[in-house]
Image (cartoon, rainbow, N blue to C red):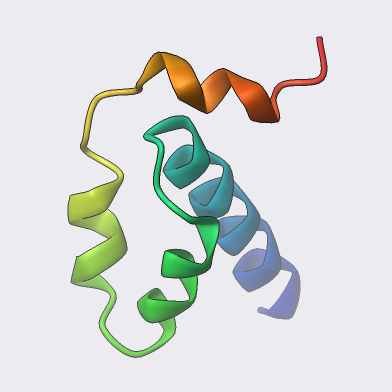
Length: 54
């Protein structure tokens, strides 16, 4: 259960960064799971690339 929770939080954190939002918003999902779900449906923005290493 913990492994699943950590991996889900990390994927949500990355997706929020791609959308140009702070990844810490993923922690809201521990209390209100619908909020990160809605935020993750936002389209990616070019400034989200600053977190890519490639």
